[in-house]
Length: 382
Image (tube, rainbow, N blue to C red; front, side, top):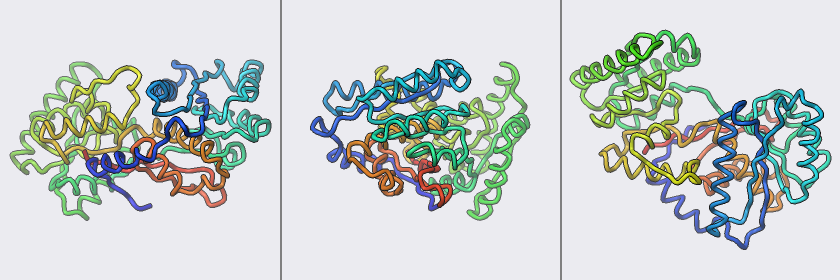
């Protein structure tokens, strides 16, 4: 895969141009259902569906789109609750107004029900977002399946930091983080290797494990003071990286105050942190409008003299697969498209760029299963 890094200034220009070709009220109307568990069982997918539904509802009122998104909640214990689950699936099958359905859940056994929909409704597009099933099961029982790429790639992080001007790379970590999140140990090893390749000075600084509020206070105080030492030692072309959200918080605040570089936060996406730090406020119906958040964060970055000093990805990977699945379902229905044509990455990438203003790659895991795609959001520099 060729790694892409997108400047937000360029991206927003592209988005502005693409809006000219976006749908209008004259386009074919579609109705898509997003199926998730309830809020307590799966908060992230539930909220993603809710955000998307509200955005489409508001845009419909504003005559921007004429598509309708409904959010359907699975019965409790969906896979084991056979009687209620069968009724639920029949409700989807019998809704003749529905053009497509997106299932977003990590519960096992959901493909047994998507199979019934596909068998009964040949006219309905069925897409999965991070479903818990084998590639073979996904390919057999859905039209398309998206799997989010949650790989913490240290090489990409260093390359992004280098592009942003970093000459030094400082990692703040705790033993607890490396034990609880094994992927971080691998990522740090990749960062070490790539820093040598890129001729970037590297320092790894261990902080105490955070188990109490007192620990949190002491760690934040230590990191803030240590950053002063790093600035004295290396200057301001340093990239800061941490292994948990508490470290992220102090790193971002100090980076903005001292005009340092943060290529990524611990979970790669720092949009939520930045919108809070930059006081980006949105009406409730637009809480999930990440394209709008990116524009506002970019504007605030200039105000705080941080243009080109912050990076990452626009939205969390697992949330993005739900957005992408909905956008793809709408595009397939609107274009009356043969599903096999929708396997092509160029179609998927262009569609999500136009709809969400986000560039991403859609790669088949296996040539045998072209309908199963690993989705990777391109890195962004604000």
